[in-house]
Length: 112
Image (cartoon, rainbow, N blue to C red; front, side, top):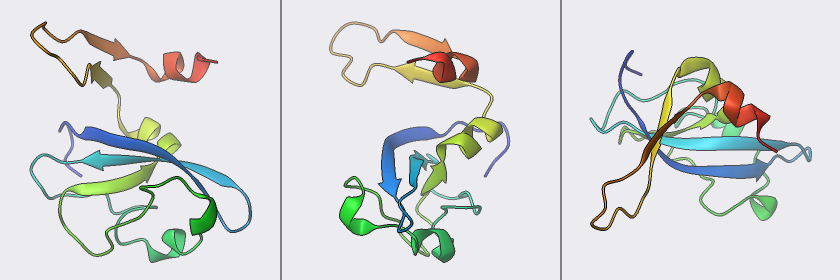
């Protein structure tokens, strides 16, 4: 990953592991198309991906193993430890200018 660089959040998914525990994963994209995360749940982490219970996980929870396309999964809490700011804009802007809101991690965690 590139320090000080912006990444897009593509999706957030919950997956169930074979031992019954659940993981919250975030799929991120580097707009440059490379420089991916190489930690747990990355495209190269076969150990973590082998523990997923495919029958009880949300659709879209799958890794593109060994591809360098700029998209990768990361554990939600690990993402919170690495990134300092998350900016959110409306997906469908229409003709109005998108609203922009910056949220701290403490605000995300304090939500019900």
